[in-house]
Image (cartoon, rainbow, N blue to C red; front, side, top):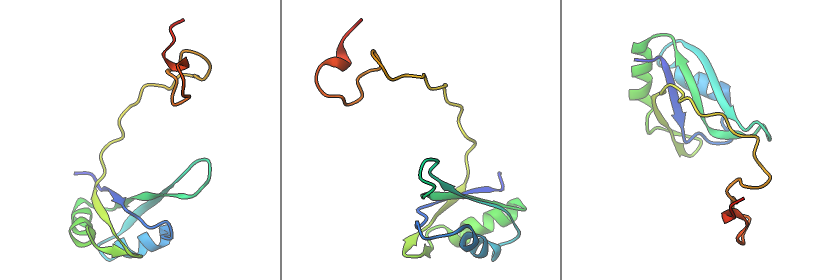
Length: 110
C-alpha cells in the first residue's frame, strides 16, 4: 500500500494546516499538498496527505473517510499513481476539432 492519501470534497476554506492537524491525530504527517489552480491560485477541492507509515495511512482512512470538515464530508482513500498523459498539441487554429465554436467550422476537412 501507498502512504499517500487522496483527500476529496475539501472545502475551499480549508488550509494545509487544517488538514495537517486533522490527520496528525492518526500519526506523523510527512507532507500535505492542497491542490490549487495554476491560473488563479484558488483551491481545487482536493489534497494529498502523506503519512509516515502504511499503518498510519490505514488508520487515517478508517477514521476520516466520510467525516465532516467545514460542512463537507471528506473522501479519504489511497492515492493512485498519476497516469501518464499524451502531450497536448500546441493547438488552436484550424482543424482542432471545433471545441464549441458553433457553426460548421469544427467539422470541415482541410
